[in-house]
Image (cartoon, rainbow, N blue to C red; front, side, top):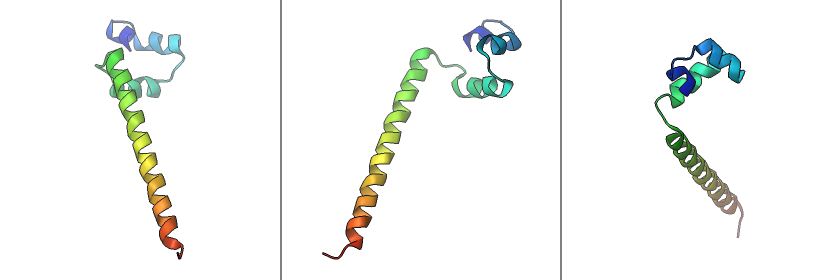
Length: 71
């Protein structure tokens, strides 16, 4: 990404990294303007949110299972 922003042609960047046009432009739309620190922080935040969602789904399934049993 930084190579393309520095003036290197997109075709050369794609060849060097063995990626398609679609991948390059998708990454640029998602991470364009971010530095490495921002991208890492975004990844960490997403991972913690995914863990929270998984825990909530597990809690919900346990709750539903407990409700379905007659005690």
